[in-house]
Image 1 (cartoon, rainbow, N blue to C red):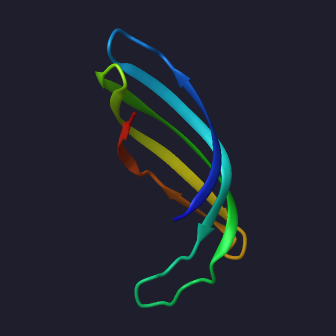
Image 2 (image 1 turned 60 degrees about the horizontal axis):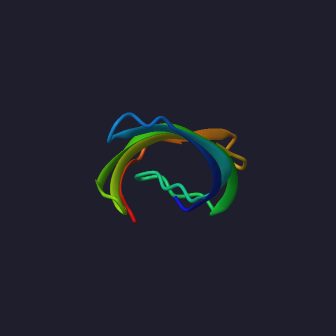
Length: 93
């Protein structure tokens, strides 16, 4: 699901590791398909996310991270909600 969101990050440095909490809100582009039952028209819906992660430094200018975020999207045309929790691994430099 493509999304355009703004987020706030609060970092808690602890020695070499840096746990953090993150949250924000924005627009999600939804297009839902149901097995054996059709699909919806793509639409932009409002949603929010909240989660946490851990930054792991590998050098002074290079670090990795892992995070999980709960996302909840309010579906306007379907009168419902969509929730999902992606787990993300990444590299920052």
